[in-house]
Length: 318
Image (cartoon, rainbow, N blue to C red; front, side, top):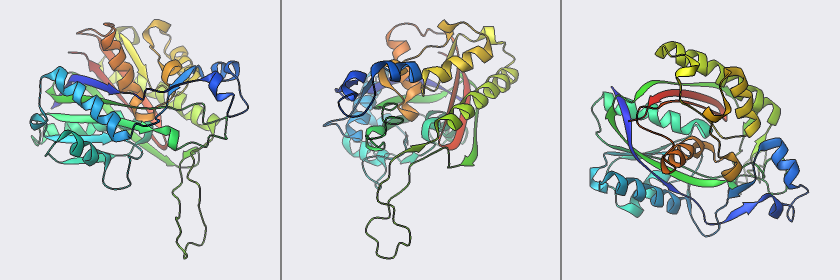
């Protein structure tokens, strides 16, 4: 049993922060950021909560599919953390839009969308659901140290929802993990526990950029070969390569390995930065809005993130 995406929606913060604005906060400049990352702007939450962004995205997806919340059998949120430690972001979303079905979150960092698709295929195979609402949402602006120019310039906030149903669009999917927290992690604080031996007061994102870069390029190259071998496709037969939008240099390095033209590798990291699990579905949503993604197009998706997690998928758009 496979699946198909029947509709999508997005929820983005109103505030757009440019590289030039960041020069008022940290020692950096537009050229330094663009040269190293390709990022020019990012959306940052001000008054919006993550639940608000999810609700906006979910309502758009429901409206486009001409469905009501009563038609949804399961809600899955892919996120590294919602507005609360508990309840789950999926439950906060359910409270706001009125769902009454089971709901839970998964945390696979930037690979969250691929992991969520894999989980959904399992529910369809067991005939436990007919329509699943998947929402990828991140508020990375609360996870970075805004005094660290190496990390705070990279990330943004946002949410994308998609409604999936049983179908044959998903031709291949694979998820994996190579557990190693050193290259990328966000520690949990110890709070005010008087018994904690090692106090952790700040829970800022910590990243070893070069290690993440090497992992991303290596695992994506492997993904292309394994996915195309399994689906009996050649690289030329893939219409679009949707790579996790972490860094333009990573996307360019993967494109070089695949030996395919630049136009097959759409990017939006320049506008939004890295929004973790949101990146690939947001790229897909934009392509739909612009009329670029058409019925019958073959998509290859590859994501990688903290964990270290990774995943890839091949889908024929219906």
